[in-house]
Image (cartoon, rainbow, N blue to C red):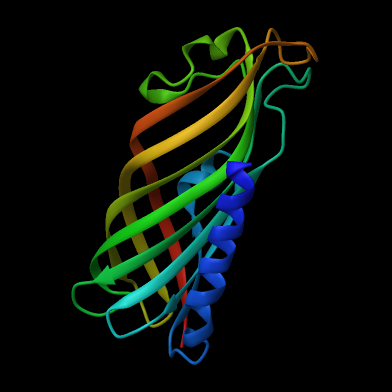
Length: 195
């Protein structure tokens, strides 16, 4: 129920924030090279809201098993809208950000950082998550159209999950929720700016 309201809230917020910016001078499309390295399909766009504010919305999807037997899974999707304040001018230099995030996952026999799901090596976890955080980033102008961006973010995530004994087992063994405080975003992004 919480995830349904979170998705509606996020979508409504994105639509309301985009409406006044349709006539903005700058729009950028982007891809996070760190997600690309994990075979996660991702795309984002960013639009100017005012001279120092932009709205960035990114999403990613990974629907594949990591092994031919389907034993190792890293399936997930996520949407992450973000408001950015630029210190100098938008699409150039330092920025601070506030982001939300939400999505679903189905993971088995993988090792996650920060002690998340230590039982994941032997069990499968399936669930959803929602959270928010703050970030800092920098964007380098490479030429008239291309930029490179780096960003790191920290925040809070709530997740609700079900546990299964193996990656193919249909019978649930446990369920629960977890509160997480730590990194919520890491990006090295290739940006194409459209004027």
